[in-house]
Image (cartoon, rainbow, N blue to C red; front, side):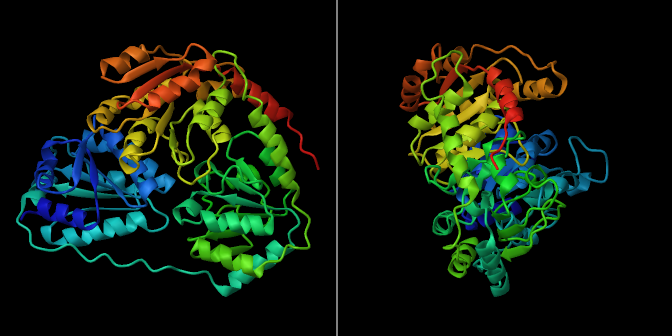
Amino acid sequence: MNTAELLVKCLENEGVKYIFGLPGEENLQVLEALRNSPIEFITTRHEQGAAFMADVYGRLTGKAGVCLSTLGPGATNLMTGVADANLDGAPLVAITGQVGTDRMHIESHQYLDLVAMFAPVTKWNKQIVRPSIVPEVVRKAFKQAQQEKPGAVHIDLPENIAAMPADGEALTINTKETQYASYASLNDAATAISRATNPILLVGNGAIRDNSSDALTEFATRLNIPVVNTFMGKGVIPYTHPLSLWTIGLQQRDYISCGFDNTDLVICVGYDLVEYSPKKWNPEGKIPIIHINTTGAEIDSSYIPQVEVIGNMTDALNEILRRSDRSHKEPPHAIALREDIRADYEQYANDTEFPIKPQKLIYDLRQVMGPDDIAISDVGAHKMWMARHYHCERPNTCLISNGFAAMGIAIPGAVAAKLVYPDRNIVAVTGDGGFMMNCQELETALRTKTPFVTIIFHDGGYGLIEWKQEAQHGRASFIKFTNPDFVKLAESMGLKGYRISTTEEFIPTLKEAMAQDVPAVIDCPIDYRENARFSQKSGDLSCPM
C-alpha cells in the first residue's frame, strides 16, 4: 500500500461517496487508488465547478464534500469554490496534488506554496510530509470541516509522498458530543423575551444546520413572535406560516425593515453576521439582542448581545419556551406587516407583460416547484429577486451563495443536489453572465445522468452591477455583452433547449423541461426595469408607527 491508497482508505472511512475533480500529473497516484474504491470520482470540466459541487453537497448533507485538483493552475481554479464554502459555512475538504518535496526548494514547474495560498480561505490546511501522518491529517480535516461553524479545509499531497510505501489504518470517528446552554443564559433569555413588547426572531443558516426548524416553528407559534429569515435561512419556518415575514437581506429597505424600526428585542437564532450585516438593521447598536447559536457572537459594534445562549439550538429554544410567558402581551406590531408583504407578492400573479418581470417568473416557479424540490440561485440581479420572492416550506430548498456571493455556483451546485436527491426536481436559476461562467458543467450533468432545469434570466448584461451603477451614478457603463444562442448551445451538448416568447409559456415550458431525462435549459428574456422601480419604491417606503 502506498500513501495515496492509505489516503483513499481514510476517505472511505469518513463515508465519502463522491470526489469531484480533474485528473492531473501530480494526483495520478490518488486517481489510481480510486480505481478500486467504492468512492465515485466525478470528472468535471473545470476545478471551480468541482469545488462548487463539493460546496453544495456539504450544504445539503452536513457531510464534507470532497474536491480534488492537481497543483498550480488546478489548485488556483479550485480556490473560488473553496472560499465560497468557507464563508458560507459549508463543510468541504479540498485535496491538491503537489510537486515532490525534493523540488520545493528550487524554482519548479507549476509550483506554488499551496498551504500558504489556501490559508486565508480555509479553517485549517496542511501538507502531508510523511506517509504515517495520513490517518491523523484526514480525520482532523473532516472534524474541522464539519464542526461548527463548518467550512473548508485543505490537504496538500506531494507526488513523491503519494507514491511512498505506507502502513496504517484509518482512525476511529469519535462521536460528537452535544453541548447545552447554561441555565443562567436560558433564564436570562426567557426573562428578556417575556418582558419585550415587540420582539422579532431573526433566523439564519445555523438553525438549518442544527436541524432546529421544528423547534423554531413551535417556539414562534407558542410565543406569538414574528419570524424573519436571512437569504440562507429560507424554509426554517414554512413561508405559509402566519408568523413568517419572509426574507431580509436586501441592501435596500423593504417592508420587513419596518419591523426592525419598531422592535425592542431581536432574537437571533443561528444567525451569522456574514449573512446580513447587523449595521443594516441595527446601525446605532441600540436594539437589544439575544444570541442563540452553537458558537459565541462575533464582535461587531452593531451586534452586542445582552444574552448569549450557546449550545444545541433545539434544546435551547425548547428550554427558553418552557421558561417564557407572553400570555399577557399583545401581538408584536411587526405581525401586521405580513398583509403588505403578501399583497406585494401576489400582485404579480396574473401579470402577462413581456419580457417577463422577475417577480412574475419567480412567482410562477414557486407554483410549479414542490415543497421538497430545490432551487439553486446563482449570483446577479436575479439573486436579489430570488431572495425576496422565492419562499420555502422546507429548509435547504433554496440555496443562495451569500457570504462569498460567487457567480457560477448554480449549475455545478445543481449537479451535486441531483446526486443527493435524485427523486426531486432541481432547478438552477442563473443570469446570462453566471451561466457562461460554468455552463460547461452541463456536460458533466449529462454524463453523470443528473438531469435538472437551468433557467436563464436573459438581459445581455451584468444586471446587478447596472442596478448599482444607476443607483449611485445615474448611469451604467461596461456591463453589456452578447450571448450565444442558448437553445442551440443546449442542443449541441445533447440537452433540451427552450426559449420563452410569451409570459404565459413559462409554466408549461418549465413542466415539460422537468419531465426530460436530460438536463434542460430555458432561455427567458427578463424585464430588469423592475430593478429601478423597486429602488424607487424602497426609497419612498414609510413605516406605520
